[in-house]
Length: 61
Image (cartoon, rainbow, N blue to C red; front, top):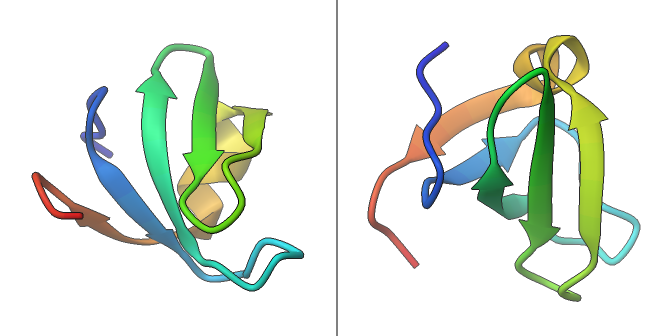
């Protein structure tokens, strides 16, 4: 999956705050993403993120 820094991803599952869109801050073996709802930053392994991505939005929001 081609995800780059600066993209917005929409996930299948919601964050506990209710938002399902995240800004991508870092890409590599681990992804660092920031919730657009509450601003919390999360680091997750690439395998877990790629399973949960519903849509990649480039240059939106």
